Image 1 (cartoon, protein in one colour):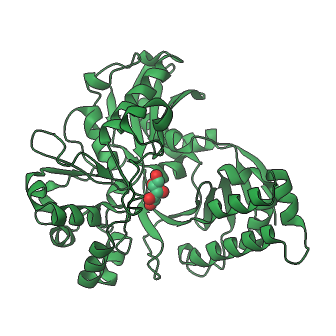
Image 2: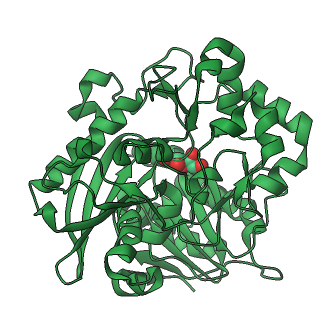
Length: 437
Ligand code: XUL
């Protein structure tokens, strides 16, 4: 497809990005920030402020409007009539409930930052114990769709009775884009405490216990990279043609792994962003015995192990308090003076991250053979040097940005050109530095 484009959408917590991928690589990008661009939804950070810290909810119409606006803006930068396919990745988890007419049952949807489900998680743990983690990839998780559905069914049983469809954010946006009930991909389904990783279908008994009638309300589980429908007139904006195929949506973390160029067995990707996330691909799911980490299905194939720590925010605070920019921060990391708070904190944090990711390693391996780093923190040589030392592995700095939207566009591109994901990754992956052993 010489002149075709594949469109990838990243519908994340704080905004939406739309990216156009052509035969030679990324051709255009447009962004929307919910706070700045859609203030009418009152969610400057992606959720409606709530005095109860555990409640983090957003209006799903804000996500739709964000997608439409990002596509319109992309259409101002590039001729979108060239687009031959589209896909997207959303913030993982979340709960959107609609009735038989497709109307929202609850005006606001809990997102992955919502932690109001501790009671529901305790109940799921009490009923299924370690079986829940072994079958679904994760111990009962506060932010997952299953526990969120259990809570809604409990606190508003009348609303739950009217609920006909239960979606996570990804399958909801996919539904809106194709204008009919869309399936969910295995990656998004595995962020719900409801999917059986061995069959790649819903675990009926777990779903039935989670909320009355939940199995009948869930979407079907599609194969990764399959077509979920065609673009509805409602989203044919910015020059996009209605009727182009929409490849089934996925989740932001699985698509980010794709967009970063993937990783081989025994290798890991570390994203040093708002939070520090370690991802590692897995051929066969092996779950975290401590119950802390998650195993998701991959956006194209296989599985993905994930551990996320909040330490990066703390790291930034320590950096700012010490009055350092990233260069000064790197120099402080290199200094061997005793009682250096910057170094002490970062060492302890990375050691914690290494300890918490041991379960991801292939049988017999003592550590990761290589690490690829991205995110704001990856700009610091000092931080990557420390990461290499604590993990005892060389660290590659990747050039890729917007890896979530790129991952989604890559999946759509497989349909446009017939090219495989691994071939696209080989063409687009760029390493700008290798640090450490
Ligand atoms: C992963 C998770 C977050 C969201 C962010 O399990 O909850 O990383 O996907 O968008």
